[in-house]
Image (cartoon, rainbow, N blue to C red; front, side):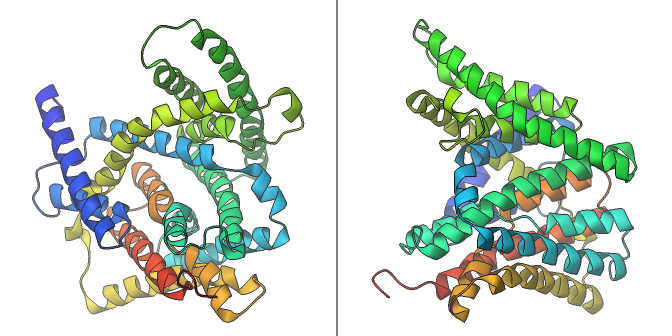
Length: 398
């Protein structure tokens, strides 16, 4: 791709993603739906102005690494510990049920290989909690018991999702599902997630000392991007996707960072907050590129519009919905409270799209199935918050 082609591609991607994302936001839809729509519009499915190229794929991967960094920075391990067994039960059921329901359906109905069906099911285990938290916040319910429960389950879900993706990535690369390989990889991943954040925190201490001497504008952004790139490279070295490194770098900045050596690595919060804020503009620019790229990669001509295929698509959407709603059944309280928690876990959003795109790039998910899978993710991302908004009590309502 020549430089002029790249510049016009970025111009179109940033312009269309911003306009359509803003339009969706104004009508109460998640902006990610508009960003995927921008990709559909620009890509081969509609206008055909842009094609999925390796250069755009690399920029999109940088976007998803930055996105996982921001998720890691907002992850509270302390909240996960303190939220109790109910949170773990909600999260585990929210992972196992969609995996079983959609994985088995993909194997028997879509006739995928066993590994591809597992990958398909794992893609639909992910939860995009940011979308649901926005709805909770708008309704004044973010600090309610349901809000805390949902947030705790989301932390568990995020960590489990990243580990699952890393395992599947390694299996696809190595071409084996040997028990010893699973144990070895799990050990390496846990070692990375245990050691990378403390290492990052120590580097933050060192960089804070240098910051007092630095007269260079933009010191925080340069430092943080350097750390993210380092950890992304280290993650790849450990046999995991680079995005796990972004997540680990974010954990190093997390406010409530709990390890046995916490007293030795207290969070220098004013400085880490500056580091986190310095990355927000970069994340805001590059993360939408990933979602637009997913839309560009879709080819709606691959979609089979026969009644049987549409019925299958509807069934997969229903199974994806039921699998997450089931997570709310373990919550004590009224049926309304159970449905609130379950519906908050429904949106797949950016996390599911990361899974789907990795599956497409590794040739695990066929092009036709990829298109249908992204539609399932997009529809659950849209319908989950709409259901949640209807179930939540209005501000001032008991």
